[in-house]
Image (cartoon, rainbow, N blue to C red; front, side, top):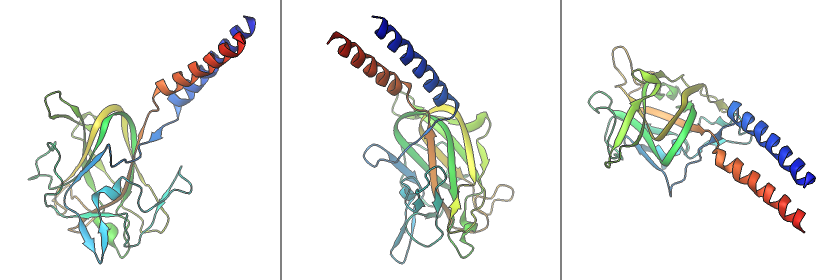
Length: 244
C-alpha cells in the first residue's frame, strides 16, 4: 500500500507540473484535415499550371518544417501561395462582413471548437515585388455555431477586429513576421476580411490589385483530458502490477 501511495503522490506531482508547463507555454498547431475541415475564400488564380489555391494557406504547402518551431516559406511561383481578386469564391454558410465593403476574404471551419491562442502569418512572399500583393489591413472575426444553423460571429480583440499584417521579405527562407493574439477564445470558425486594395485609409494590400497570402498557422491549447487520461493509465498500470 505504501508503494502505491508513493506512486500516486509522485504521479500527482508530475501531472501538476506538467499541467503548469502546458498552461504556461505549450501549444499545438492545428493541422488542416480536408476530411473534417473546410476553407472558404474569394476565388483563386492560376499561373502556368501552378495552382495558387486558398487551401494551400492552411495545409503547410510551401513550408519547410525541418525546424517546425520556426518554419520558413519560399518565394518561387510554386504551389503554396494563394492569390485572389475581389470575386465570389467558396462561400460559407454566412460571412461576418459585407462583401461590398470587404470584397476579399479567407476563412476556415475547423469542424469543432478549439481554444485558440494565436495565429502565425506568412504574408504573400512571391518574388519580383509581388510581396506587394500581401494583405495589409485585415479584419478578423471568430465564430461558433449559433444553434440555429448559422454562425455567431465576434470581432477579435473586442473592437472592430482590425489588424496589420507585416509585408513579406521575398526571401527563400521567410519566417512568419506577424503573430495575432487570439487570447484563448473558443472558436470553430475564423474569417479574415479585407478592404479594397486602393482604399483611401485602410488599403487591403501593399499596393497590388491582386491579393495574396502564403501561409497561416493557428495554435490551440492542448486538451487537458489527454494528460488526465494518460495519468489514469499509468495509475491503473501501477495498481495492476501491485495486485500481481
